[in-house]
Length: 64
Image (cartoon, rainbow, N blue to C red):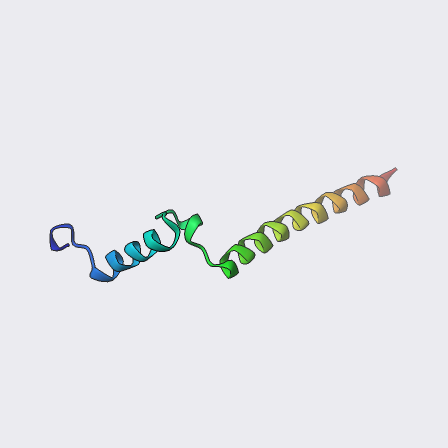
């Protein structure tokens, strides 16, 4: 570990990830709360985009 300047805690963390999910990828090791937060952020972004589209449509319709 010293050869690679790697902290023991990082190695323990990686071992735990591999044992629980079989993966080192971040997306495979998220908690349910993190998954929910990610989904809510995506939904929020989508809704903001819809609001912007509706505002633009209202402006266009108001001009006619």
